[in-house]
Image (tube, rainbow, N blue to C red; front, side, top):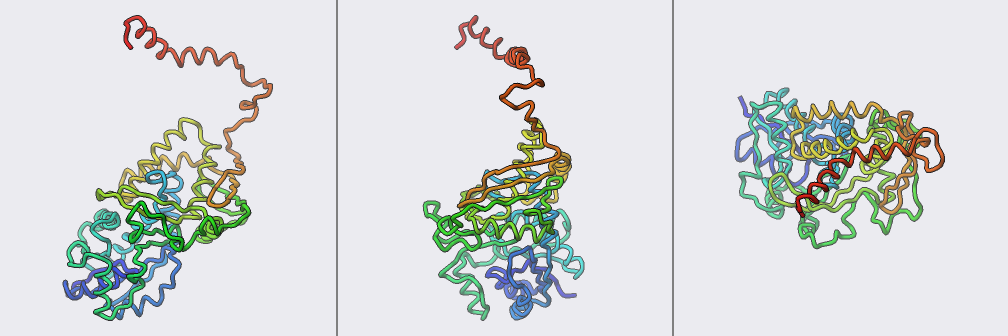
Length: 402
């Protein structure tokens, strides 16, 4: 029986050379799997490329809608943002890809799974934890941790020696990851956090200098925390996010520059383009301001940080993440309504929000005369709320404590 291994395949530099490496160094029959998570590339040509580099078979899997509904939407509803900026585009995509790798491995009777993640990155953790959670018996092969290649330039030389065409050259050696949610850029001149990103770095969002000179208004409608329409038009998840990406890119929104703390212990610098996702997060947040009470909103902010860490760390298939989903889903029962945003030169500004479950009452909040709020009641509330502070102050005065 031949040894079969399923490789997470993109046709990029890393996975292009991993196929021959696995055959040469392990005698594996390599079955490749390319996941379409909305990277915007024509994947059909990969059949020929995978075959030329030695794969016995290639699966091309359209995972776009499942990616949005089962991974992006739960993370959006949680309000999860890693280290104040990162909307988790790469982090969310890895579990669904690894899950499909496991399913194909079972179908093909494979004994192992391989990936092209480097030994310094987070993705190796995300892929492998998913495999451990879903198929602990499968062997995991990570060439970057065992081979002699130590740089992208050496990878290119390895590929050229075997007649393999690669999309990365020594002139533009950025490490990029793209899906329907975002595009990330790392490496090269970005490795020095003192360098401003070059003018030609962005591939989705327009530079602020090139963005529209007039503002764009966009309205999003939500049902239980999930976006369902843009500017009054009901759209399926893929079409909706695609539309928001287009609108956001024209206005230069959703670009962040972040020096982040990787799970593996080092800091790394990346530039992320997330135009549609940034709009979605902003609108969802505005609607929660309108529909969630103080205690729930504040506690949900605590949950959001933990949720972001779980996603970033690759423990998607973990009982804690599932338990947090139950909490989040309860909070989203009233997060229904419409939010209008004003986009201009990289800015996303609130421009109105409406919900049948709004907790905002103009009668209570008005500075004008009202008959529903007795302002004299505030005195007793303040006396009781401030009593512990008053008692401590009296103690300090009596004891001479400074």
